[in-house]
Amino acid sequence: MPNQKAGIWIDHRKATIVMLSPDAEHITLIASNVEKHLERAGDSPLKGSYEAAQVPADDSRQRALTGELNIFYDAVVAAVRHADSVLIFGPGEAKIELKKRLLKRRLGARIAAVQSADKMSDAQIAAHARAYFGPAGALRP
Image 1 (tube, rainbow, N blue to C red):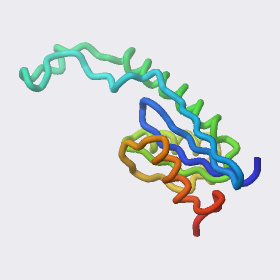
Image 2 (cartoon, rainbow, N blue to C red):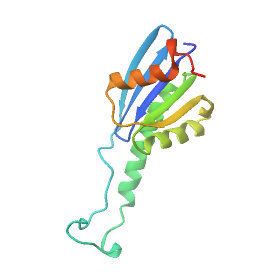
Image 3 (cartoon, rainbow, N blue to C red):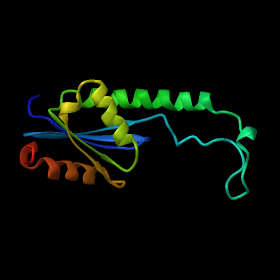
Image 4 (cartoon, rainbow, N blue to C red):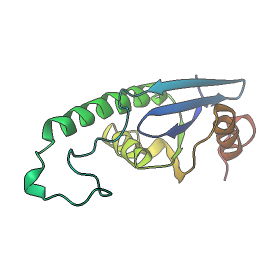
């Protein structure tokens, strides 16, 4: 569908994608299988410090996290592949990681902007995307 714009609110747990066209708006939710950031096992900072040598390496857990995030980002990229312009926003590093993934897939020219944003409802996400792209999903100057 020509003249599609996409607004993506993303963190490591989920992506809410608002596809805008002159005559329609569609919201898609893509959840990752990542529950939370993995932390190293060991004493908590409140209970006292621990020595790095006493804490086992978490390489396999980190590889699992990275693998899940790669699957997640690929699903988001696939969902917005046909958009003419993409606005990425969200609270953490996921928006930068998604931007890198789009650049790697040679879709970087479609990135309109990357913005920081707090947690939002689906309605707020849609409103933010509409406000950014303007009436009928047209790009703002």
